[in-house]
Picture: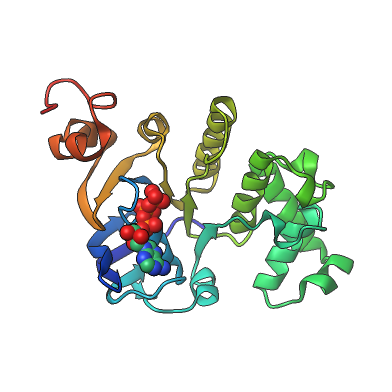
Length: 257
Ligand SMILES: Nc1ncnc2c1ncn2[C@@H]1O[C@H](COP(=O)(O)OP(=O)(O)OP(=O)(O)O)[C@@H](O)[C@H]1O
């Protein structure tokens, strides 16, 4: 499945008096690679919750390939092709990597995990193998997921989302908690996955070196609203973004106010 177009129209979400998402309208072209950045509390994770159905918007719409998926519950949104990597590597802690992937595929298709562990159909095993290959997990196929390193658990989280063949994949800080070397390995892996699959990939990231290295477009949130968006170059030259978030370290010369 190739990428789908994701459109957010006037999304708003309040929690009591807090406006977590404030009239956010963003358009993610099919097959694009975008980063979402912004200070702590800017509403990045809430935006992912709104897209993935974990939180319902107070108002506004989420469209996938033109179809309104606003307010559907999480499973339905996954079925429409929006995948999200969660901290779920331990969803099946006693399963191996290969079994976890097979179980994810099968439960997605409505079967029970325990049954499938015993009798995984051949095509499911083949799909799990393909995803392991893509994610560089093939050597770990028989390792129990609870014994994986932190980085490999995060890769398994991504693999579990990928196994459902999403049109849109949301990654919330894929490199969080990793050392510098592991971080680059992870992001290169994610970039290769995107090149191979060309799903619409949206990731939240605090490391600006990573953002500016791989993102095609960058969307900047502040106080729940869109502060700016554009190519990495445009965003790095935007005085409002420099002032609110980037500081001098990541600004491009010339326009830093
Ligand atoms: N369930 C909730 N109940 C109340 N307030 C919430 C809830 N979820 C988010 N918020 C508030 O909404 C705002 C945006 O939070 P969010 O976690 O989306 O920001 P973020 O940009 O992802 O932050 P960070 O970079 O620190 O992860 C914050 O003020 C937060 O406290």
